[in-house]
Image (cartoon, rainbow, N blue to C red; front, side):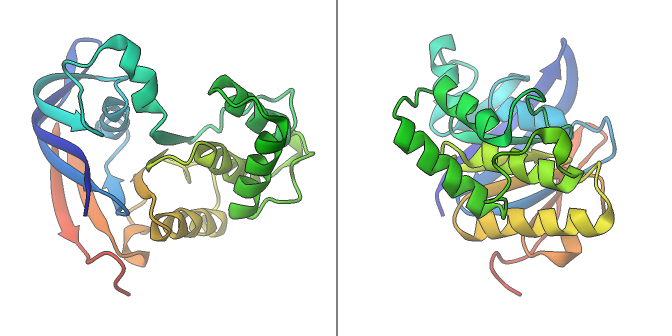
Length: 229
């Protein structure tokens, strides 16, 4: 499998404080990875470090071929376009319809052709099971539906990796299970998914890797062969 992210002896800082130390990690194409840990354990900082929002201050960090410690500032937007980000708190524009939320992202990332924009929006909404919801405002959707729109938004530019930061934190168990199943199916189609969660019940339902974030370190606690049932 292609190695997309490779950390060797990495320290990660937020506001000059070391959050995680001596990280050794490889992330490959098509993997499904659970990143487990309590609130404040550094899960979000690790995800942010991948797209250079949290600082890597020691070790070797290569992401999609970029050296995070040496890359030029002008290259950061190109790195970030390789990721789709799913936030717990949705971050949808509340004064715009679903379609307009998605169009805003596409235009902000360089799309200009109206027909291509419409087609891509239709594609991602269909992929997340929300094909008939494009005309709705965010407040007209349930929490689970809003999170599906957030996943659709993350898929707009066909990223190689989806980073999901506690995406089920505000959802009831049944809705959360459906959302994780959607993310898992996305990974089965070839997109790597790294999902941060403190819900210990979720990893047992899906094959993949389980990495614990605890006491400023990462530990791989189990690996299930990808694709096995």
